[in-house]
Image 1 (tube, rainbow, N blue to C red):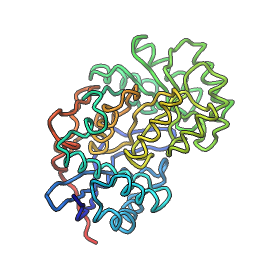
Image 2: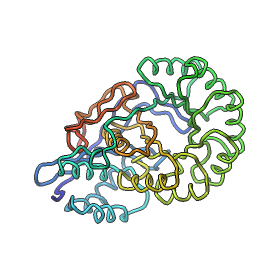
Image 3: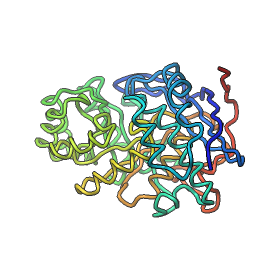
Length: 365
């Protein structure tokens, strides 16, 4: 079965409230939507979220890559030749991982549909649901406490606090949230590359001395500074999660060989999709490194694909797939069902289970 056409569109989805990190403040989620079509009538969905601060991609660059580079490669591609197709796609360019991920997840959607299987069953079928944390944006301590309490009321038990803008204020923020939610709630911290190596060690050690029971700290230092990440990992007791440092299987191997982290955050947008994410996961599993499944601020298309991948694999121990909880509306018809912290995948809907996306502006070239 071959792919005969591709449709490319875009959509903006408002957030419930502004999303603030050490890198950026976001007011809406923007997605580039991909539909791959077969002659038999199957439609595969994928999406890419422009995230300049992380992947270096804008809407224009994603659309250009999809139309000029990936479209000629994917039209005519056979669903029975996964290795051949993915090899050609991955050798077409460097970077532009979100654009590649959109094509990848749509291809896997079609592949599972052609076999009459839900994608998570095709990928391994470990179980059909996952549990996610929720991210609390960097704000005043009072606002972060209020947001944390709302999250608990909505059924979340794992909180990820965005930090890094002001270390002195960060201590107050974390202490305030921990006091408000109690000791049974899991708390992790994400500095989004904001600290230097020695600064990160000082900050994390202080959290440890305060007995704030931090589960892990995510990407405390610059992504490319592997020696800094290793320094932090060696000098604190708290687990260190690598995020922006891991895009490729080579990145994962480099981190593991340098003993630079305790955990790896997988994101389809960074890896270029399911194909490379599987390789990263296998490398990590062989080294005894556990993985977290993460997402960008993106639509439920990509989150559905990530949920299928996470549900299929037993070595993904935690999920950070909270984007649906941050969006004011969901234009995706079908896909993963979200209720509080629980993401449930249908045992009977084939592929991603997505039927349509409302409000997409499809582009004419």
